[in-house]
Amino acid sequence: MTRSVCRTHRIRRTARVAGAGAAALLALSACSSSSDTDSDSAGASSSSPKLSGQVTVFAAASLKESFTTLGETFEKQHPGTEVTFNFAGSDTLAASITGGAPADVFASASPKTMATVTDAGAAAGTPATFVRNQLEIATLPGNPDHVSSLKDLTGSGLKVVLCDKTVPCGAAAQKALDASGLELTPVSYEQDVKAALTKVELKEADAAVVYKTDVKAAGDKVTGVDFPESAKAVNDYPITLLKDAPNTDAARAFIELVKSAEGQRVLTGAGFRTP
Image (cartoon, rainbow, N blue to C red; front, side, top):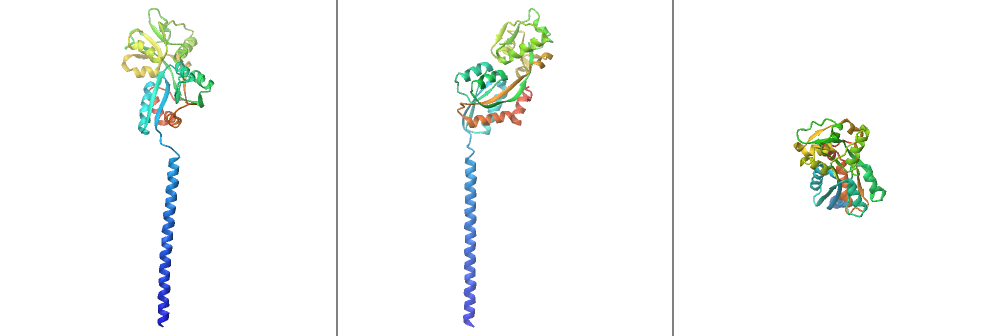
């Protein structure tokens, strides 16, 4: 009887030890699995490197206000990055890029100037149109000369400024003039739309044909006048990653921000139209 009891105790004791061992194995397995999972998670995280460094964006002058805002947003979203801009006439920027100027992103005010870059093999991939822009007449505050149409700009005694015909805003203005059968001899041709607008802001000209976005950005410094011919000269704005971009990852992320819902809100808020 005693042997039987002792044997039973041994069996129960062995079972308890075996149970403890199994629990230990399960715990070890769970720890190992968790460790592997954490390792995999860390590996996945490391596969998407944190963005850092400088992103250089060459952008049409008319994008100055909205892109500056988006640059600040980008830097907040990605601490450790810095977005620097070169705003100028699209043709000037395209010439700089094809001439070897280091840049990550190019945003042009027309497909034609973008083609200068793509034809030279300086773009990575196919440029995407992200906004459109339409012309408007900028007059002195309050429109003292009572300009109400494109034809009014051809009147004698009125000092009118246009963008150079090689610049997208100048090419669009010429297209609108041709569509209406009008001829206009400006007092000066400017190399970008901001320079044309500045002439009116400084009262060195009575009017200028610029973009709606520029009139809006100028606030009460000018008065805007719509004209129907502008609908025949709307400019598409393409953007692209550049082939020799020094900071490819950050450049792609900036382009995605521009095309995102957040980016589009900023751009349409500045007066741009969606593609």
